[in-house]
Length: 294
Ligand code: ADP
Ligand code: ZN
Image 1 (cartoon, protein in one colour):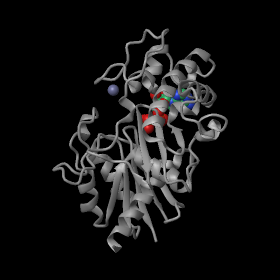
Image 2 (cartoon, helix red, strand yellow):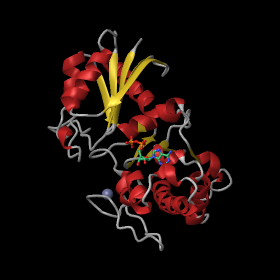
Image 3 (cartoon, rainbow, N blue to C red):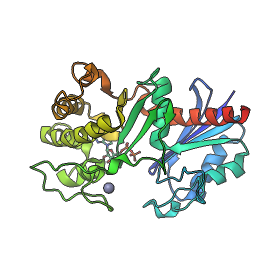
Image 4 (spheres, rainbow, N blue to C red):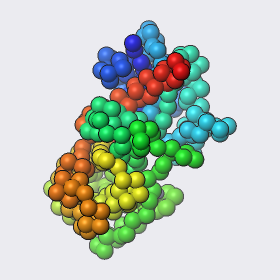
């Protein structure tokens, strides 16, 4: 049985055809341009496959509230061409199969909980630190959603005493994303993250901010595994710094081995490497198909 998966990002789209075990048979990717052009490429790729259903993990803000008039639309994105774009409706009209959809980070959390670093666990948190910061969560085996999806990248953090950078978030200036996403690193230090690999102070400051966020997520959600993905997290030297900072911040208040001696296996890189989101999207398709059998 074949499913289609779409990982719709602000920079690029990834489309894949795969089976229910997450095995990808064919995959393409292309840059995100204006909706008509981008969706034409999506539709062209999937034509010719006999798909049971499709899944979409999309950048946001993305309306996932089924009672809302803009359900399935991308809403207030700064990528203005996509503002209010009915991406799910477009896919439904093009393919006439069930469509499962969620945010890109929730799709990645589902991928990791099913086949990745959190396999076998009914709870995990997936965080991406890239062009922005976002997180998705599996709680009791289900993707976390309330009024809408969580926006965990925009929480407030204490400032590093040595940080004079004003922050880059257009809404909150110095929220977590404004201080710690890739573009903030680049603007603060004057070079792209990848060029700063050997600058210890860069990664100490990054870990200082990310660890505060993780402390709050741990205290609020108590996830069984935390997975950190996205371009910035390719700097693997941040992991031990984050582990130490989180331990210090928690200060043995919550006493679990995962939060002390085993923290290296608790806060980890994605088990599916760069495929968490696309495999999660395929799984959203599978879930949508299973819904039709109920
Ligand atoms: P997106 O968030 O757009 O899907 P990425 O997760 O690749 O894409 O994030 C892009 C951001 O991550 C950019 O700001 C880039 O400078 C930064 N980045 C990408 N690769 C690296 C790397 N190896 N080391 C540090 N920063 C990186
Ligand atoms: Zn913000």
